[in-house]
Length: 286
Image (cartoon, rainbow, N blue to C red):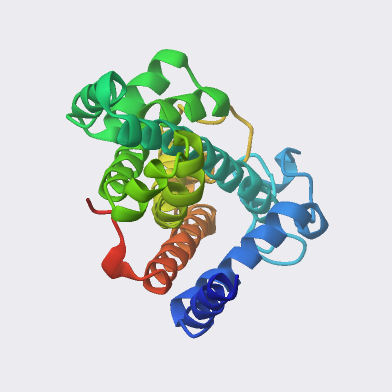
């Protein structure tokens, strides 16, 4: 108990002393506030059009001006936080759950389960993940649900590969052998001995991977395979604003800024977690 508490204190000390973690936490808090309390900051209905106020310059009630349909760019940007980041977080959570369960099972038990997983890994990782996600999203059609299915269908394999490699590197350790000899079952060994090695590394992997999911969701919406109009998702805002770059450049620049800041947020947090949890023992790159 004291040892576990000491390890937690050591990790927290490293995190709080890491500038990347502080920057990542501040950015994360910023986006959490926008996601949970965004309606309090929205001055206008993000879906309401106003043909008498088309492409208005920034100022007054419109901090970022209006778009080609007279909608408040600032309101649409804040409303899009929940769509973009919410989708990315849900997708990454599902990816991690599937990856941890399948990867740990394959790595520990081996046999046919491991062979099937390796075949899937070889097949799916033979092609760029974003291309496969694009194909699946194109077949399913536009919509955030279909987009989430496309990303989960492709990216869970990489997550499972990481979890499998970690499990295989741990399962032959002396303490695992001793636990088996003492009569412990597979589930108990996985819960007490494998999981403490798998979860920290998968937390790092998942945090770093959210950046790719955010960019992927925005990219799909940009080309019309994400949200359906007039939903204010960041990638969709980029697509809408590119034709009006001269009239109101903030339409596209503000969306780019949000995408970059959110991606940086998770990269900072992932790097800080990797440093705090002892990168020498990290199996993420295995």
